[in-house]
View 1 (cartoon, one colour):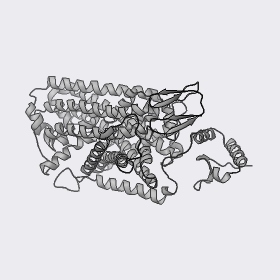
View 2: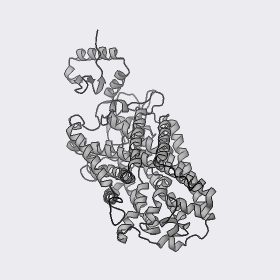
View 3: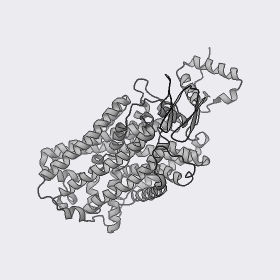
Length: 579
């Protein structure tokens, strides 16, 4: 028998004759050897089910696609310019990039120790005190899922709005109705569902194309815009111009102007959700998070600088723009109609890739959450397609939810804006919980993985917590004065409703059965999968034989009070009427 140390400090026992050390993880070497990733996953209580076909580049591409600069910066740029001018946009982006990178470092350190699909939700189960694990995991999982799925709605509706803006440029007399835009949104959602139902190998290729689309497309916009735009702004204007059209004091307006940057630099935790499909996950997943934030920060700064240099008339192009988003007006005045169409096409392509990456990451979150029975319909959501090895039910469950949220775009523009704000707040709160636990109650028991922050860990964690709290508060604050029913930020109402609904459901129903991530042996998981593959009669015969053979029916089987079915070691076994 051999003891196998893992990167996270856990140990496994394997009946193997030959062991070979490979870095921090010992790998068993024979024809049935399990690699380091599988051993580490087993040490965390889970069996390898998904195919590990994703490289570090693909993981980085997925996370980078989620915090797409073209998708996040373009629709909110005009509002940011009116909430602090070029100062808020340029200097604000640099400040937010640094602080978000610190948050990424905090998450990457935890991810390296626990590289499991489900990410933050699993991390919390290892960091929280035992009595608080169920509730802490419940809230983290629902916050994380809400942030990712509502982001799909935001990205895909953004594409339909840009399509409407192209029509407006070409034919000012035609007004694309809100119903027409919602119809286009549904088509885009369906395309994302189909793409993410494919084998993960092809999805990895798709997201690598996304990476190059973002980088090459952004560089093209930067070069052409600077080359063709006449009467460019001066460097002094770009770095020092401040304007406050919010009605609030200047300091508050500047903080509001930071929200565009924080909205863009979110969703990078998708790299953690791909851990069980990533090769060398204890390093690949955390590096994917950091590379995504770092690359987005650098490319985003170059993009914002170029756009701000192309502003010729602040009042005409931003405050009183005849075309929205306002950045489209700047492009049209600077490079003309043909190049504007090219630019907008690049931006819409980036939004499409971003929506696909968000669909991918959120589906893995649902898969992991359903694995522990925490989602409605978990029995179906926790299934892998036998051909593509993708959680297809989880993919389409998120697509349907995104479509329902999109109805708010038809019903009420203000309510939809609140939902978009909740997207960022929910993601931030999901980041906050594991970082706070790690720096407080788990600071002595936390065992780091290959990637760690050493003596700087605590200070970086504390700064991250402070920044998340500040930005979460800002996202529920009003952005215009005087505050009226029309311009009020209703994000606090939506957020409070979601928290109340989630906590109420937990206390009145889920508390009786939800205990956080299941901690069962690998042998039990294999037994569950074998049972799932049997027919109904075979299940009953197998169960009957096992129970009577051991004489421990009370320990091995439990009735499901909701359905009357039997459960064997957590696997549902349907009862069949006998003739």
